[in-house]
Image 1 (cartoon, rainbow, N blue to C red):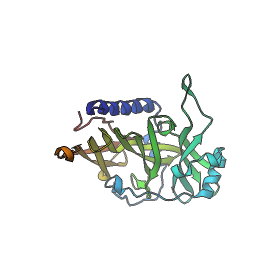
Image 2 (image 1 turned 60 degrees about the vertical axis):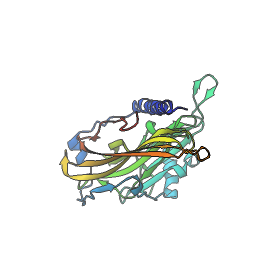
Image 3 (image 1 turned 90 degrees about the vertical axis):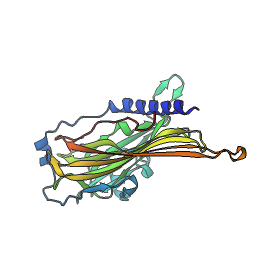
Image 4 (image 1 turned 90 degrees about the horizontal axis):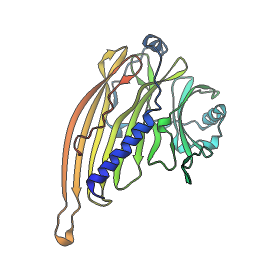
Length: 302
C-alpha cells in the first residue's frame, strides 16, 4: 500500500472514531459553587506532578475480587460477564471504591447490514461503590469506550493512576487513561486518552475527559519501511488557579521518524530521518471541567 494512501486511511479511521463516538458525550449541568462544595473538607497538599510521560504512569493494582462480586450483584449483572483482566479499581476514600469495568454482553447483537453480525458487545462502566457492602453510590456507562467485536478501533483496559489527583486542596479525582488502537501492521494508529473523574453529590463528574496524552499515526509496509509521527505528553499543575482549581500544564513532545529498509543484496543502504518539536498548553477549569481544543493536526505528516 502506498504511504500516502495508508496515511489517509489512518486519518479516516481516526475521523470516524471521533465523529461516531463524540456524539454520546454528556455535558455536566452542575454549577461551580455547588460543585466545589461537594468535596472533601480536609485540606490536602497538592502534588503538582501528575506524570512526566506515559511510561511514568504508575498504575493502581487494587482489585478486590470479593467486593467486585458484591458490586456485580448490586448492578444486577453476572460476575462471569465482567472481564476481570480488562477491569481496574482504586480506593477513593475510607468508605468508597471506584471501578472501571469491562462487561461483555453476548446477547446484545445488532445487524450492521443484512447477514453481517457485529459480534459481542463490550460495555465500559464507571462505578463508585461502598467498600463494605458493595452498594452502588453512582454508576455511568461510557459509550465512547464501549465497542463490538468487529469494530476497527479497539480499546484497552482503563489504567488507573495508583494515587488520587487533587485538583485543589479539597477535591480528589481518579485519574486514568484508555488506549484506542487499530489492529493493523500497515496502518499505524494508537491513542491514549486521559480522564479525571470525581464524585460530587453522589454523581460522577468528568473534570477532564479523553485528553490525548500519547498518539501514534503513520504507516508501514509491514517490514522495515515506515513513516510515523508520535506525540508524548507530560502533565502537572501550575501554581495558578481558575474557578477554584489549579491550571493544568501540558508539555507536548512531537517526533517524526521515516525509515526506508535497505537491500544488502543490491548494495542499497537503509535510510532514516528523525525530526522533533516541542509545544506547551495550559488547560483551565471553567467551573465544570477543564476545557481544551481537540487538536487532530499532524505536525510532520502530510
